[in-house]
Length: 321
Image 1: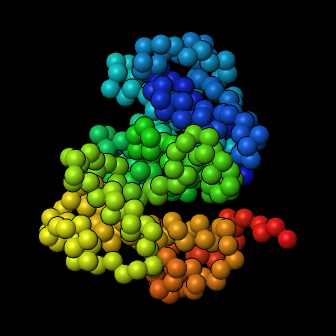
Image 2: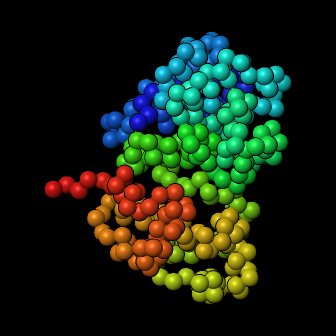
C-alpha cells in the first residue's frame, strides 16, 4: 500500500500539475473517510524553485526524500523553456533507484520526459500530453506511446496526459492501491468524477456543441437505460437525426463511437454494483446491458485488465450485518 509520497520539483515546474499531486496525496482526508499520506515536496536543490508561472515554490527537502518513498511523482515542467532540458543526474539516478526497489513512479503530463531521460520508459506503454506524444516517441523509440490515452499504467510506472488527466491518473492510483472508498472520498472533496478510464480520448473534436445540437439529453437517457439494446438506428431516431449525422455528432461530442461509449458506461455501472451489492455476476451483467457473465468478463478484461470476481474481491464495500 502507498503510504509515503514524494513529489519532485524542478525549475519550470507546472503549478497546476504540482497542485494535483498535493491535492490528491498531500491533504489529510481522514476526517471524511479518505486516506492520509505522508507527503513530501522535494527538489534536487532545495530552496526557491522557479515555476512555469513565474513565481517560486520554496522547497525544504532534497532527493533523500525518495529513498523510502512508496510513490515518486515526476511533476510536469516546461520542457520547452530555456535551460529546462538538462535534469540533474542525481535526480535521474534517484528515480532509477526508487524503481529498482519497487516504488511506484507517476509522471504527470511532461513529467514523462523525466522518466524517459532516466531510461524508465524503454519498452513500456506510456503517454503524455497530446502536444508532446510524437516528441516522446522520437526520444524513446522503444516505448509504445499512446497519443490518445488519459493515462497508462505499465508495471509500477504510471504516465498521464496533460492537466486534468493527472487528476484521473492520481485517483486511479489511489483506487487500485488504497481502495475504491478512498478514491471516492478524495474525488468528493475535489468535486471531480471518481473515475475516468485511462483509454478515454484526451480530447474531443467539438467539445462545445452549438445550442440545440448537444446530445447531452440523449446521453443521460442512455445511462438511465443501460439494460436496453441501443442500436445506432434507434438512437438516431431518438435524436431526430439521420444515422450518418448522428454518428458524426456522437464522435464530435464524446470522442468515441456509441458502442464504445456504452461499453464504458456499462462497465462503470457494473463496477458500482460489484462494489456496493452482493448481486450475482450474471444478474449484474443483465442489469447493465451485457446480457451474460461471459460478455461482462470480456469487457472487464479489455477495459480494466481484471475479472468481475477479482474486482469485487478487491473493492467490495463490506455489508453491515
